[in-house]
Length: 111
Image (cartoon, rainbow, N blue to C red):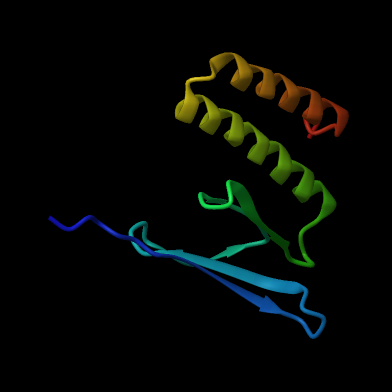
């Protein structure tokens, strides 16, 4: 029996200084095709090195306010993932508390 596979493709257009100006992503089994994105954070676990490989990109059009919201929402989803993957309810709750503090300090709750 063959396992199902899917592909996730990210296309990044760069300017002459290698700064992202446009990003699009496609996922073969979701119906998403060439969907625009202004930023991405990609983390991959290297089992051999026991280390995280990361790629953070954002376009010139990504505003500072959008970046703050992006970070806030990413931190919240990381708390959810921690809880689902490890069962660490208390630590996930502490992370959510930090996310509230983060949003409060950056005045994201007033928007």
